[in-house]
Image (cartoon, rainbow, N blue to C red; front, side, top):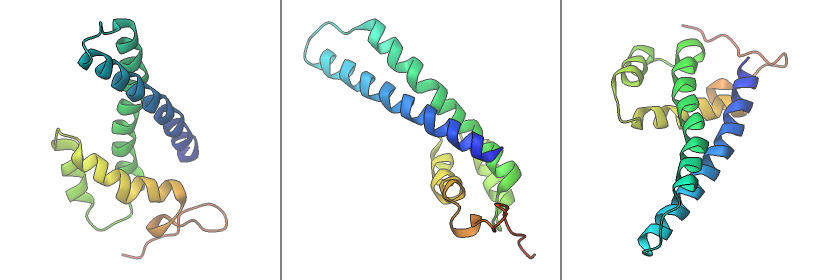
Length: 119
């Protein structure tokens, strides 16, 4: 299930990057006193939003089911209560990306499963 979620995140991430590039182009054209293209701006937002929302939700799903660390309550409170998204980005780099790569505390066994962590 997580492999599929990670693939979906990669695909939506590529679309989001394209959306950001389009929005950046619209901002540049606006700053050069040219008429902004509303359809392009809408396209950029529509490409960006699904990836951003999916990433937001995926971080919470990951913490809920696969978190491998000693500060579960702290991460849970930070991910659910804070509104800026900074802790979700930190969690992305500290936990979600290592799990996607199968490295660090998310290294997999020969069967592809995560080993048990002794308490």
